[in-house]
Length: 196
Image (cartoon, rainbow, N blue to C red; front, side, top):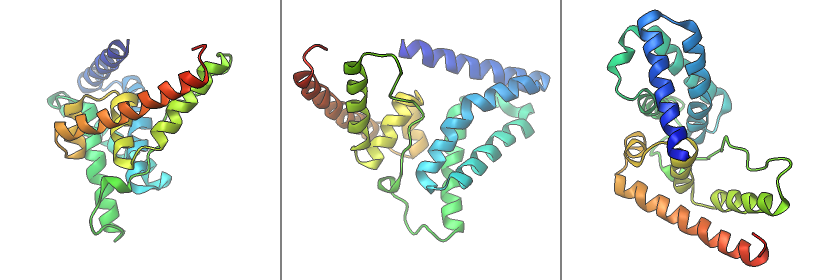
């Protein structure tokens, strides 16, 4: 199911990109903006820790999509291209503000878009979701960011590696750490709430 949703999102981005590039379709651009803006903004925020700058950079990057729309089809994967551009823009802003001697992924502050609580669900399920969310929040910052990019933004390991300028092996190791800790939390949770 996750793979289907990811494929649908990728397909939708490609369709919208085609519409924008070929027909200057403003409606398609707005749809693309609303698909990509939240993830880009949160990614930039994780680096800059400034909601204002994150919004500005994400907006500027998406404005560039419109301004350079004739060449959009030359970009193989627009989402990855924008995330890489977002990382570069965020690091440039840090440098400009003289707040960066050496940037480390351990300095990121990750916010998740998904809401882990859903009204009307069984209490045990909500508690399990809370347990998972708490476990993810307790992960080291770099591990949190990689987990978010993989699970929430639905990026492939290779794409995350490209975005963060890391090896695929590093991405794989960090996600293994996250999944192991989440599995352990679920195991402990099931002992506490055996009805699950």
